[in-house]
Length: 508
Image (cartoon, rainbow, N blue to C red; front, top):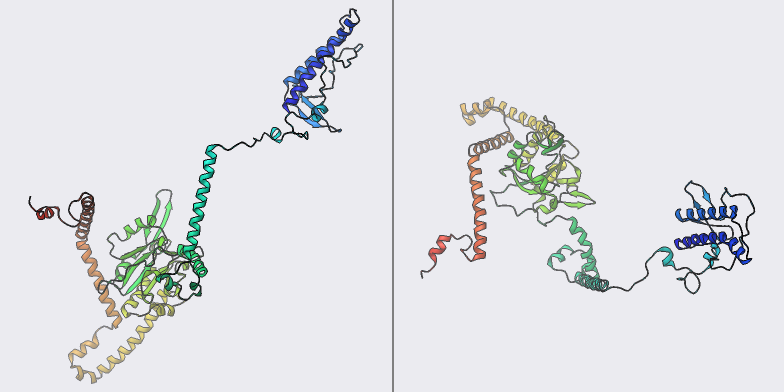
């Protein structure tokens, strides 16, 4: 397009020069002297100025005319549009010379139709324009050595990937081992190659959603180092509450009564902290809650949870504990969706300082430990759709009233004289005068006294115990470094004193 514009502008300038020189050539051909005409001079000057302005203006916009050709419209410096065939308005009056076409060297055809219809030098045989010249697209070129090497490497890698995929498919249809056979023992697809391939493929998603380990907790310790029950507790909302403010940033508060709750119930329960938070967010908070690890026996974090329909669920089946003696406390139903028969829903703590939810829950949990309930699921089922602390307190009062009536009747019989001769005067009379206490009350007093003694012991010897624990930790770290150096450099065996090793060496 730019080449056509420059050719048209040049041709227009040449034509203007030719038109101005035509009367002179005509006069010379007739051997006469033609005076300089003012009109001719004006025409030549106007035409030259017009062509000069066309050369200095912007690129013309080609618009198709009615007959299929193209005409160019230019915008001058004054903002108006001037046609190439339009004459200047300030043309002098007088006779206009005939500007006929001649066969001079400057007679160049610059019509737009000829520019359109003439085939381009780069066109093909059919006269069509080259697409690459019009659009500016690069033509196809030969591949360089770098491109060829890249293509070769890509094909090799794709081939290796295909072979690996084929080998994986073949391996997925192999015979099942003992663990897989036990897992799919009730599935008839395990007997065929395609069935085993399907089972292993579909089980991959289940394995990704499952906890990181099959057994989240080690085997229980033998008596008396273990506890008969397992209590699973959550962190945020149950034991703590986190809040953010512009002045202090993130701050975490401890729920009222938490220390007594954990310390007292640890006499019956193996307390396991099971949270859906990752370790890097929950770990610092746990260190503040139980720095001596007296109450929280095990810690389980996000990787120990199971994903069910996009929700994070705590899988009690992977705890390696008897579910008949496992209780989980949580503030959300989603947390125990797989085991609602083992769950106790606790009201979420929002930071209220007057909260007593944990304290009110202690009698229910201690009653399970004192009465040694063989199956906690049945007990929790008996409190279904109720607020357990309130309902348990109500039932306890009713049971206590019944026992008090029995004790009162027994006291009346002893006071009539029949029981006095049986037990011997003063002793029986003193026993009936004792304050009324049930067996459950006496057991509670015994465990509460044991808890107070333990707290007293830690208050008196806590600092010494922490100091010894720190020294043991430093000693173990030092032994680990020494053993690693000795193993690499051929020194003493791990766990053996360096001086003893030198003394045992034979003298040279």
